[in-house]
Length: 194
Image (cartoon, rainbow, N blue to C red):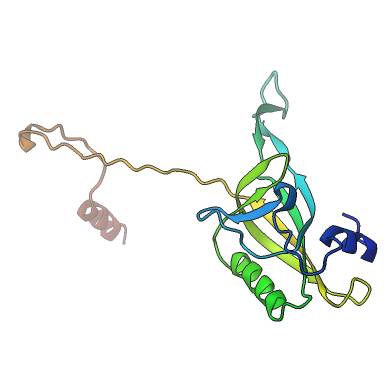
């Protein structure tokens, strides 16, 4: 992703200073459980989506027909990775930039998942893996540009079953099996070898 210029940033946040345009044109970053905005940002500046699929290969033992070949089976989708860039301005809003960064750090350090709402598609159940932010004189001292690294989380339902061993009706009728020497017999053989 290219580094935005000051003109790009000013255009992105609009002409009216201090105007709240969070969620404009359907761009939102929501908590997955509560569906509330995770932080108060001025503009959703950039979005990048990447997803790959992996084809699984298994080696085959060498025999007369196959000399070290492999079989290829299913294709598996890997979790997607997104990059979201947010802008927060701080004109006439003391403490708001600090709260913005604290809200993002809460999701970075925690296990709460987020949903990314775009005009084209919604990406649900994601974790924030990392964030970087910058504040430079060229961009204006009142702007913070934050880039979030976000990854899809797939929850798997697990189940357990309980099975019980059934005892025979009459224990003496159970078949016996010879499993070799018992511990006493082994000790006797060991002592005899000396």
